[in-house]
Length: 383
Image (cartoon, rainbow, N blue to C red; front, side):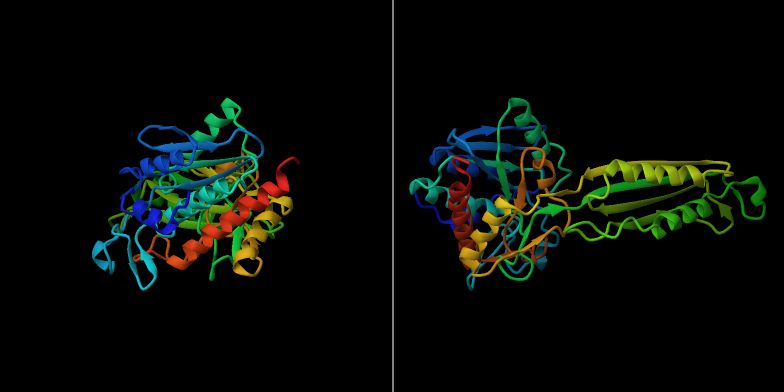
């Protein structure tokens, strides 16, 4: 069975599946995979549609992971074309999700169709598709992975179709990601008149000093394949409407993107310890609330990454950089099941006005995925 990845991408884009809405996008994926012989399971958690589909029962099981949800279009009038029309202009497909990442889903489905028809899938192929990657990611891949683990489902390796190329198609794949922790710090003091500071406890100097110590600390000097961990203060809020009032409360938020030198919990403990020290001698409280959104991970270069890189070279003519840059992705959840890498289109226009992907590059992506499937089973079947 032959599928056109561009036409399938257009069909998916025309479903305005802005998180948490699905608008029938998952139905398209399920129907198409079922026609290829995949056994499909819808896994709905809360209002989020998820899908796990598998072709074959033999080992190894190569999984493709992706998402059908997209971010909002923003100012619709700023788009040159209607954001969900999926128009092709001068060989470029324009639409929300063209890059991130309905094209990736379509390309791997089309690649699977060709390799299955040619008898080149010497094991199992599976798809783990969520509708909650662009949201808070609590009812998507994370819960699907937990359910598959509880059932004993074995996935040997996984490819996530996020747009990983930086400048030109195939120039980069992701073999790891930094972790991320968000922290809210609230300093509770005592409100009072600025002329009588002895009757108050000003939380602002305490907060500023604490943030200064955190900001000045060198977390590390990097990790194999990773840049140094980085702390960024994202907001400081007092909300004081007047000039002669010592406020009762000051708060701040920060984010740390960290490499495998740390865990989210170790960083949370470090900040809590600094907050405890800041509270000494202060007539008030320092409250720290951490939220760990993902741990750092690395898929060590080896046989699997060699297969993926070789597939890119087969089509693009040169090998990709193996990178750990960028933000978080659902790969942080899948790593609990198996080794995972990320490979997709050039990501420059993702989340932007006139998000777009050249039609030729979508076909290239399909070709890379085909070569990846063939090379994967050559390397791992019977191993």
